[in-house]
Length: 564
Ligand code: FES
Image (cartoon, rainbow, N blue to C red):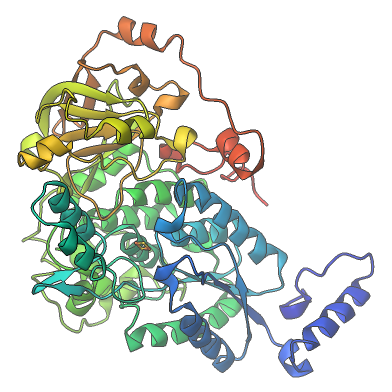
């Protein structure tokens, strides 16, 4: 009989019986009876942190999951991992997603458990947990913390963080004053939970449910809703059932379920960041969706969910309107229905169940979409030979086919030093270019949402074409080309752009091109040298091993082929 529960993976002293005796003895010091220690164990990867507002209700969720595990006859064992609060990390949370994924994978594998519940929410935590679980390949189930509720300001609903950006743009343009922006500061993030719009956290919650890694109907329940605790209790029970079925992430995360997830990403008008995270999660299992297929999915899948930043509503509206169940039913003809979820049920079986009620103003019918094309499109061209991403659903259609003069910033510091310089030579039809903000150079921060130069913002300019090798927050909007690969720091053509060059964007052709002769581009890149790697520590590991955006910015030694 194979070991289970507390006897899983005994510490190696060269005497197995002694290892078992010692472990049980120490476990007894936690007040656990022999009867409890004989039960199967569900680990609970918990991520509370004084630097993570989105996870403020984590203790309540851990308690509710534990209740479900106990009720189903197993022993819950919560354990901490790295927690990543999006806005509290320097230089960028993205740099630490892989650290959290490694922590999650190793703690699942090293500690004695038969299944694991992963509780995350804020942007990088859910992808990190799914990456770690995919590699550890123990039966696993994802629970998200759920979205925030909205606040109010002068009768207007506010939600982090699309409205943060809207109000900050008004403040920069001088249309609201310091007192008002200070008041708004206290009205944007008013409850526990993740950002209230279809940003990265909400997108990843929808993706986790579509993949089949979380219980049906749980992605959009608000963080403070009683149903969130019920979902946590049910997740605990489901984790115990997983011990019996032994369904593992590799059974659930497949080429087909990843394609379904990309469809949902398009239909919710979701975050560009999810493209990177899904590539990293699926890359752990050797699954790759090429950009050509990504664009097919985009062209076939309409945007159906009317939430900010693409539309008007907030996650609380999505939940009340029918949530993921309603959306998946609208998408049913496009989905692979033979994928399975953590309960072993096929998507087709799930979608046969009757639906409660749907608000078509928030979750639009397939034949009356928010937009006929999917939210995101992949670009290629001589500026992005390995690809780039453009969120057409949150951009200005008048800029989809445009050509302009490059105004180049060579890095983040150069950008912050000069963007508001009154003498900056910039016009509304220029293309703002940010170099050296990719994974290798800077950990790929959310700097791709370059601010409109103050003098243009004050003159009423609301959008311009902006291009970079950086990312952008899922809550942001604008005509912005992101994730250009290869990045400038490793000698990608983006590094060759100079002030005054012409750049052409064509969303119809899915191209971003530098209108400079190939020979001249090569000449400019001939002397390019990557920046030196930091000498020690995690940042050194990161710089030496991080892959480009199309590979999900994972570490080269963590992708498939580096099996445990
Ligand atoms: Fe955590 Fe937005 S800051 S989800």
